[in-house]
Length: 285
Picture 1 (cartoon, rainbow, N blue to C red):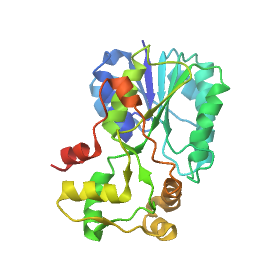
Picture 2: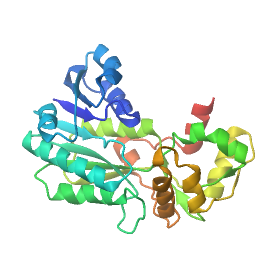
Picture 3: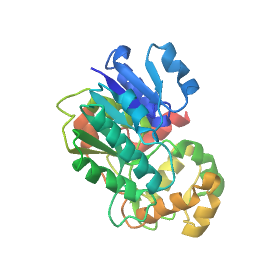
Picture 4: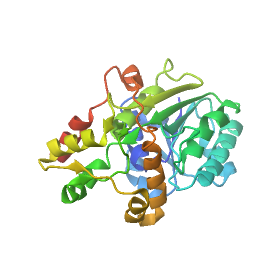
């Protein structure tokens, strides 16, 4: 078997590789990366590492050649058009290089009425794959719980969660749990079903007062909920021009579009995903 993973040096991609190493020999892993120097640790472990260029379908096809399973983790960009263009190159390369099965990362903010800037991309993915010649599976992630850990000191200082979510809830999954599920699906034929869409979430979602209660309990500091207006939130977190994208995501959340809860993680892994309180307690101690 040959497993090819793109985005292998990103936060999720790195953890997917680490999860796969526990399940298959390293000789079966083929990593596609944008910057080779970031993958030196993987090379030292005996993994095959190749530079990829999403804008060059011919070179991408060479990396994907003879792949039994291709795990596609999109590159980081802030607009749907860039991601759709990249995905078109990926689909073309996968088709021309004979990839046997494509496993794609999705996100729960993919509804047709979702104002999230990247919703068009995540909604496009399953429709485009359905029209392709590929066997494929999609794994949709909830929001990552991981950013809450470095964000907590700011929330403690503010004494409030400030997401512009109104009375709606958010669902979470940790990157480690997501990566473990990706690796399990990729290596289990019974799970790697053509056209199957899995959704990874913890067992419950959290309204913002409930999230504030969890954060208060794990931090030992009283944290409430005082949402910022969308425009103020966007301006506050506009580092790297991400403010508008983040605000648009929470605008979708305020419509109840980020609260989905699924049992798919337990179906895949045989146990529930780590709860948000347990995740935070583990990473804050």
